Image (cartoon, rainbow, N blue to C red):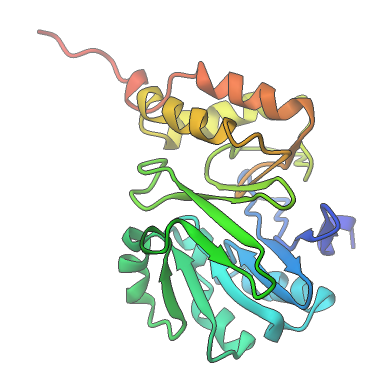
Length: 247
């Protein structure tokens, strides 16, 4: 067993509870954010990931302490396990927090949790303590209902597919010098264009995050945050890479 087989604290309140698959080029990250006796999970993962993700959560807290799952978008690697996840949590007031465009698609998963559309709640969700999570819509990056979550209390930013990366081997939870190149392949394959990407990056950078926690790739801290914003801001992606049509 390696350290990646365990829940890994990222900060005093945030823990990585994802599943590391050494055979995969694309690692899927799930995060647990604690606020006192309550918790929120970000992007709870696919059905194959569920046993590992839930075991790691149980190593940290009782699942009944989880008030909500935030789904950054509707992809199966983000929320394919939601139906079994909410069964284990077992709360009548459990919420599924996402954009209404995402919730419209998640309704096909047979979920019982209460849908909480961030775009209908002033782009905010509040813990019982009064601590707020704030949401930034990032439409078409790469889903119509994509959102980024900012926790102003800690400065953490849960970025979904933005700042994600492919790692063919030797993935690390915290970003190293390889991360810009690893982000290049992911964003060029999955983000629609630089013209859509750059304004979203500017909105996120204005919030001055102290930590970026993407659903793929590695956690970005310190100087690597500004480096990542600058790198992606200059990156052609999606249709930018398509050959020009003949007139």
